Image 1 (spheres, rainbow, N blue to C red):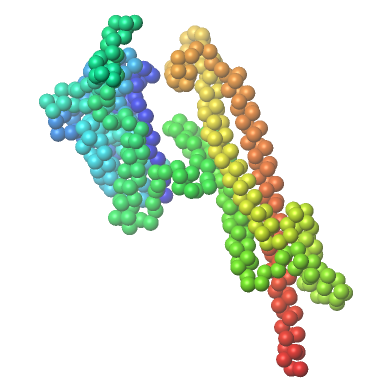
Image 2 (cartoon, rainbow, N blue to C red):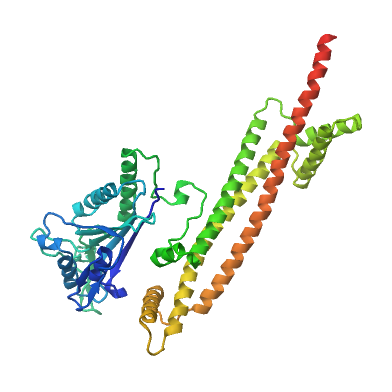
Amino acid sequence: MAIYHCSIKIISRGKGKSAVAAAAYRAGEKLTNDFDGETHDYTHKGGVIHTEILLPGHAPAAFSDRAVLWNAVEKIEKAKNAQLAREIEIALPCELTREQGISLVREYVKEQFVNAGMCADFAIHDTGGGNPHAHIMLTMRPIQQGGAWGAKQKKEYILDPQGKKIYDPKKRQYKCKAIPATDWNEQTKAEEWRAAWAQLCNQALEQYGHNQRIDHRSYERQGIDQIPTVHLGVAASAMEKRGIRTERGDLNREIEVTNQKLRQLKARIAKLQKWLKEEQENTEPPTLADYIQGILSRRAREGKSQTSQSIYNLKDAAKMLNFLQANNIMDMAGLDEKFKSMIGEQLDIQHKLKPIDRRLGTLKKHIEQAEIYFKYKGKKHLTEAEQILFTAAHDYLKGVMNGKTALPVKAWKAEYAKLTAERETLNRRYLALKGEVKEAEQIRRSVYNILRQEQREQQPRRAQDVER
């Protein structure tokens, strides 16, 4: 089934990343980084089914070589925190053939990136597990018409109202601001690229006779009452496939259960609303309280000569009246307000669960990486696997802390416990709301049962009146 996934991230030297290493991994090749002399060999990596480099017309032809391209990027970027490349990861529709998927990615890369002046290096991965996807690495520095690298930004002097440059005596220079050379980093671009991928995929699915469609918008923007699951990632996905449960996998399973409950609740409330609308459109709708009271009174006067079905309806009617009285519902408008309050509370639960589930996923990751970091910090003679785990945890926490040194693990755990308790409270309220909806549905069935029996009893009376 076609799914939408399009993530955008920056490969930065400041986070310990290398454009050459990233390209080698995604292409499954062996590349040497001239910047630090390190060789990255991923020739044994499986699942790489296609790699390709696309260049704008004015780029050097030598950039068609992956090692040349990304070593040129590493060389031109001097800063220790330089942004080396942009990576876009997209999921390919499973309905398309391998050739159709490659052609689709190629068209997307040309239209959105190469035509804008970027060099693009994309690799398509498919291990046969139903998750074909593409990694697109893009240069972030423009190329001049002569083939040389251009500047990422230029400086522009800040002028006073008279149009003169403003001198800063503290810095002993004129005040200026940086103007980007391209619009590639603008926030609107991400939305544009995401929407373009969805549009191209849907065109291809329609062209090749598939009914499935994807949408780049969030569930909330689409008006879908559903909580999005979290991205598993390569490691967690591999563990889940081997039958090993992961924290992210458990979180996704909890979200799926919640989504199922929300869908069931919404469907029930929709049925109740439809029934209410039909009842309110009746030309002579009796008030609920009066109608039910009248039925109860008449059945009481008729004594015990009713059939078992009548007795069943009588019990239902009594239960219905108790519900209406307990909720101060005396007419159809009052019952309508009760249903509206159910809908409002259902939406409130959903809106509260979304940020809680997202934050719980983030906190789980923070705490997990912090525990790994403290486990191996200061330990001598780490194994290769332990060193990889320690380095990954260190890099992750460095990005999270953003320059701060003390890890607030205690605060993370306290927040996690608090949010977990809030989530449990919301789930308990959901179960109570589910019971209320079930009771309201029983009222609906009871009304229909009583109405049908009334009609059956009135028909013989009408026939007798005609004969007289």
